[in-house]
Each structure stands twice: as C-alpha cells, then as structure tokens.
Image: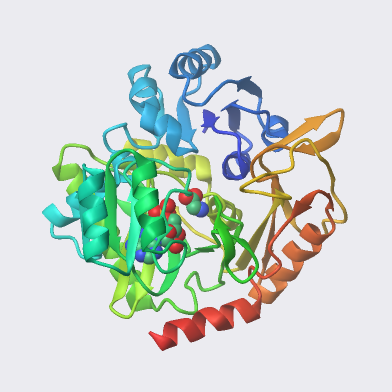
Length: 429
Ligand code: AMP
Ligand code: GLY
C-alpha cells in the first residue's frame, strides 16, 4: 500500500511518529516543522520549515507534495484548525477538528462535557469567568485546589496549592492569568497516561506510561513538558490494576461517545491523563494528540504497521486486531539544556557518546555542519527497550550519561527505587 504521509511538528514525539511510519518501506514521509529536526530530516523525503500553525503554508506544502494523509503531532495546529483545513483539501488526518480538539484546548469544555454526559472520573471543579470570584472562592476554601488557566499552556500552566503555591501565591497566580480559570479539587494518588487510537467510534488502547513532569530527580523543581517516561512489559503499571485500566478506558470510551453525540466526533489520538486515587482513576486532563515523551515509549513498542493504522483510523475501520505492541519495557530519558525550563542555556554544543542499544530521538536541537547545539526546549531523548524495566533503564541511562555538553537528565526515571516509592505512595492512600 503506497502512502504519502505528512507529519506535522518537529519534536521528539514527531521524530518517533516519523520513525514508526517509516518502518513501512512503501510509505513516503513528508514533514512540516518550525525548526529543523535532524532525525526527521533524515527520514523525510521533503521538509518544509514553517510554523505548524501557519495553515496557508502547511496546506500549500501538502498540496504540492500530494500527500494523502497527515499526522498532527502538537496541539497548537489542532487548535488553529489544521485538520479542518487539510480535510477540505481532501487530506485525511490523524487528529481532531478544531471543535473536537476542545477536549484539550478548553478545560471547561472538557469538564462540562463529562458532567453533562454523566461520565465518571471528574474531580469537583468550578469554572470562573471573573478573577475576583475565583479569589473569593480560594479564600473561602483555603486548602487543596488545582488552579488552571482554561486554555493551552504547554503543560506548564497548572499550580497546585499546598505543593507549588500557598493561598497568597494562588491568589497572585489567578490575578496573573487574566482570563477564565478552572479551580479543581486537588487529586491525590499516582499519575498515569493512557493513550488510544480513535476513529470516531472505535477506540484501541496503547500500553500505559508514566511521565515525569518535574525538572529534577525525586520529583522536585518546576513542571516541564515532561522529562521522561517508562512503560512495563505487561503494559500496566505496578500501581495500576487491570480493574483501574478498565475503569480509565471506560471513561475514554464514554468521552468518545459523548463527542459523537455532541456532533464533534473524535478522531486521532486521545490521551488520557489520570490520577489513580483511593477511589480509582480520576481525569486530570485529556490531550488531543500523543504525549511527548509518551509517544516515544509506545511507538517504539508498536509491532503493527503504523501506516495501516493511520488508514484504518481515517477510514473508520479501526479494530484491536490491527494493533499490537511488543511485550517489552521501555524507558525514555530526555536530555534538556542546563537551566531548563526557567533559564535554558541556549546555543551550547552537545556531543553524543556511546549509545549502546538505545534509540535516539532528536527534539529541539540545532545541527549545523554535523555539530549539535542546544535550543530553548528539550534537546534529545534516548529510549531503552528490553524484556525488563531494569534492562530498559540501563540502556537509556548509559546513552544519556554519555552525552557531553550543557545538558542534564533525570537519573531516577525507570529505576526500581522510584517505582518502589510510587507503589508505597499508592498503598498509603
Ligand atoms: P496538566 O497541565 O493539566 O497536565 O497538569 C500538570 C500537572 O498538574 C499534572 O501532571 C498533575 O501533576 C497536576 N494536576 C493537574 N490537575 C490536578 C488536580 N486536579 N489534582 C492534582 N494534581 C493536578
Ligand atoms: N507529556 C505530557 C504531554 O505531552 O502533554
């Protein structure tokens, strides 16, 4: 089956998408990205350097190259309506329309959809259009709240009271947001990611993954886009039972059904971020795309033809029989510039060491005349894949610690010590 597929986006996630698609030798990959990703450049037949939200440029390139399908990596082009635009040109997309992407781009829409359709897993929440009212609510409910701007924030917009801010800090933050705010009950438990392929009606889950948002070892420091993630050979997590997985998947199935009922059928990748609480999984948020880094874990494990999955999603013929993942563990570790995320050291040389069996995914990194240099965001990632978590961790850690330059990574991701802490935490609840 000859396919010409456009990959939109230039991060580690999109390098993993392009690499997975290119395992089918009959598939030609094209790319639109804001900054040249050295990994994608090597895979793609042709690249167009443009902002992913520049719909004119993306659509002109798609028409010029004659792509039949497009896979949209990041959320910002989805919010800009890239799928509506490309579908108008007859290009079938992996990604929801602008209206359906509201599941991620409008946090109030997501919470209200779940309420209206009586879908379980919502925390207590309230949407505020007025900062004074939100401030009053915080003063009256001194304590455990999550404060969220309503729109996209690159994963860095949430503040948790009692963890990142006190009452005074919460009030100051609400004033800073200058827009609608969602205040939510602070959920306590362990987080996990469940990603699924969705064709509008059918939904097929991928292995569970746990991401690490905090910048430093031991889950300290500011929130980042994600420092790395791991997955287990049984595709569960040690603190998520099969029953919890069934509950989380059933919430996602209900959300997909609700979107169809609302007249905005959901197609693409649905990413559920859950908190496994004493009462079972609760929804932290949904994303309308693969996670970054989580895409690197699951796509490294994908044993089926990704291009075939792409066409079954766009045809509406997706089924579990078309999707298989290797029963192996993965550990993904991101190298980030020193100072990331607050004051990243830009334009610093980076050199790779012995990578062993690790898989390298490039992200926000400049490559000129064979030399790599840091930019402002996450630089590159290594994925280890092995029959055991310890094996996968050793592979990723060996490659990551061999990198020289002003970059750092989290050493604890995928280690047994970190897992033991997660399991103990879950037992305490
Ligand atoms: P988000 O940008 O929604 O992914 O949130 C970033 C991080 O904030 C999540 O990974 C959670 O750790 C935390 N978070 C978000 N909402 C809640 C909540 N209701 N309760 C506890 N933690 C939350
Ligand atoms: N890893 C979290 C995200 O992609 O939003």
